[in-house]
Length: 483
Image (cartoon, rainbow, N blue to C red; front, top):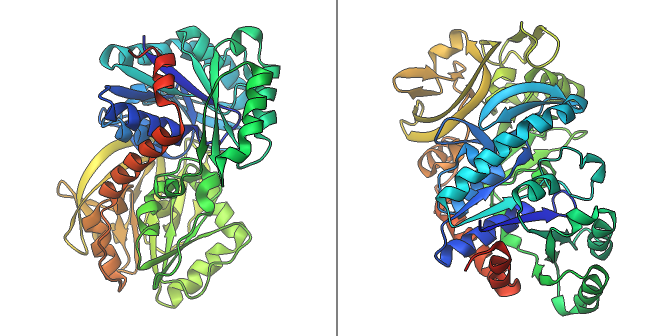
């Protein structure tokens, strides 16, 4: 069955984007192609057409394939709730919340679902491009592995190893990975790619030859740095240090400790009139910002504590006294209220915690998880908007009488009496050009020509062309079993 698995020498080496670009290249060659990641760990999730959730990277890869995201594309999603525990989502639905040590015991029971999803995709498409997680060199995790070589061996899928030269030591990354792999796993690797090269690739000719000599693996190319990648949705919180500058409207976003669905911010960062800054821990929120956005979080009460530990609650209160705007999205909306109650202990010990008190609402965490796509109408502008919900909890209170939006005639979200503080459960708002234009106009900004979805398509086409120029795509498809 035609398939190829892209594994990496470590996290954040560019696997996700490479799969997206290779998928678009295969699509342009006339293949029906689908993405697949057996196990992902991310709090940046997308809602699928069949009402489940998958990692954001697989949603981007689906777009590259010209497909709607489906839960089979990422059958196991781990969503960290604390340093040691994660929510486990299987084929789009929450299965359990487990500690890291307990998850190792759960993995054998998950492999059937992983293989079931993989085989369903294979029945429907000409090629499945598989993305690994982390690195196969983490041989301490090899037993019962479903993310890397455990899956590759179980499904008999050939592997290409990607190394990241930008972080240094790529020769050791690739040769060292082979050195620690068990012989059967190493035999699954059919070649390597060097990613994120800056400068003249010919300067690495000797290093490239050395990797081939030491490993015996063929090389499929040295891929130069692709600068436009920063405009595509990111999945890893490590990418959150990006900012935009030059715009007249200053937007500040505190980097919460359990920040989730932060790709909500990507379209704003690309608007010429917006100067968006991610506020790192230890930094104050500048007094001259026009808007503070409290983003989503996987653990609302934990991030309420985090906001107070950073002194951001004081900065936000001062901002409000100066007449500044505040927008809370999902968990950020819950944080803006008077209290967050978790009677069942869904996000930690059961209890109640005071919120920032900027919206007259209260949130109660309930076991039911809301996961759905939404079409709404923004109350302030009357603009239609498409987004999605993915959250625990319900929020009620007097400020709900001034909703942020209407969804099929029902009130959604809340606003303060002066309209300066808003909260909503709707993610993905700013990808909608109509809403984003109206929202920026409400802050005093000028309309732009940015068409966000069109720009993403253009960038994926450019990424595919970039890969075609520098990588032996024909050779990779031959390894995958495509004719």
